[in-house]
Length: 251
Picture 1 (cartoon, one colour):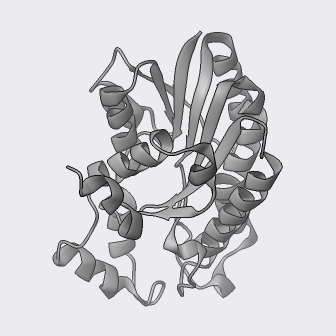
Picture 2: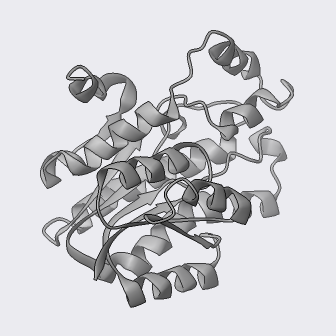
Picture 3: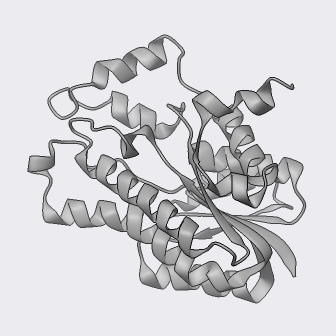
């Protein structure tokens, strides 16, 4: 069967840039998934012979099963990149209601974990799973309580699975991409400072052109996935700001 790269949240931002990067550099099929058909179609249109898409919501058990059934019938899984995530609700943690909390955690934490569970048996030979992490997994931001908590949980899932998957032929890794010029950043800059007190800091990142380019970040993630040994890949959380020079200095 044909080798497959699965990228969640492939309609915009890092996920979109990754789909294009893999289409440029790797053989096989890239399958992108997300909730907005028009965004997925736009990504796939750049390389329609290589990029396929399936509309699905990773927070939904039935959609995860749909995705699993689709892959199992046609492909040999090589890489999973858990990129899909939301930042909403952006507000004080004391003001987040239960429904908002559960929806957020279902997308950012339950989706990656239970999709990995569902797909694990579909890897053909050595496989790799990638978590797209964030500095918010390690540092607290007022107004980002749900996001910081979910990314911290995802980081711990990576650490636990790194131990549990040892010796099974599937390696798991985690990458901090930095502050990237994506639609999520646009949403952050549009927030009110009463909900996100550090809003101006992120406005200044954009004004001073300090946001990372999605294509460069995608190249970095691609290199981490494809140019490292399994042991090196899993042993730490890779950080674009401190680790990208290993590859970009050679270009």
